[in-house]
Image 1 (cartoon, rainbow, N blue to C red):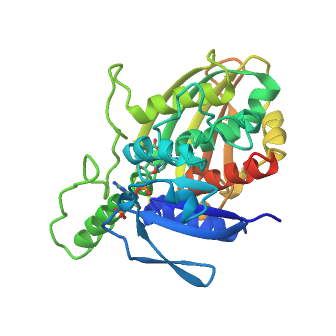
Image 2 (cartoon, protein in one colour):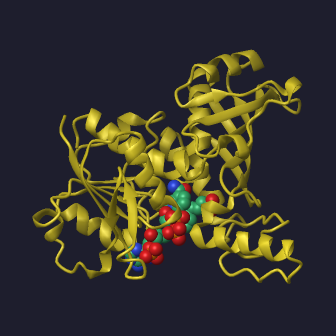
Length: 345
Ligand code: NAP
Ligand code: 3JN
């Protein structure tokens, strides 16, 4: 089997370290793995397959022909934020390196595929070197919605998210931990720096910045990305994104309205057989998905499925997945696996 030279840009971040783990756990065919971040962490060592890889400073590269001449790169996973992606992804692509980008920089560009392998694998193309990974909240929602959409055509989606602190990056996690530790020692709780308000013992109804219509960018990402992934601009979607004091694992309460009637049993049967989904739905014995039992799992869990008593043809459900895995690192590695299986990489 062919092996590939792979780079991770943003390898020291909350998502980047999970990319390293996913490549190892899924036995992705790697010849050499190169890890890049900023000058702040260059020199740091990260474990990969019983050896240590030294992180390199991506900002030190001025002549991008080295991506081929020195590193022989086939593919790069980017997770260093939108501005790094906007600057560097086209430079990697110009050298013939496939880029799977985890930021929002290219997601809504017409010619850039936005891929969730269980949902729209046929949208990958040979003629573009940059492929976008959707937002974490979008990914776990569309994995669960797609089989229901195929069966009964979803007309409308209302979603309220409960997003873990790790979605905001490593510094936000440290901020949360410091607040909890200070409280436990009876000390004053430190002021927030990374998040807009204190997250310990709180919930924050704002993720990312507000846009003109009163929604946040995160909420509009869920709307626009879902439509692009489903290639369907007619689906009506309204989203409300909330940060909760959870370390890892985004949860979503989702209401859907379908064109055809779906009974609760239909929805359960469909989801039970859907790729990437585990049905965890036995409320009588207290079984439903929660971040504490889905953390570090590669699966998206669905439960609390019931009829929406407020409308015709409505289903309500609860979706939980590890935001750093299916919401980011895992989906990116699955896109790379898809490129190999389609003989694009
Ligand atoms: P993080 O924990 O803050 O890590 C950021 C990473 O980017 C670190 O490795 C950092 O390197 C690197 N970096 C930052 N500025 C850089 C620069 N100028 N040049 C080179 N490297 C730079 O953030 P994260 O949670 O891992 O998220 C990273 C990005 O992934 C986000 O900004 C976002 O675009 C995307 N993301 C997507 C999803 C999704 O929904 N799919 C979820 C979370 C994040 P140093 O350690 O050297 O500073
Ligand atoms: O906050 C979360 O739970 C998810 C955050 C995602 C994120 C954070 C910073 C920048 C993104 C994203 O993936 O949409 C971005 C971005 O690239 O816009």
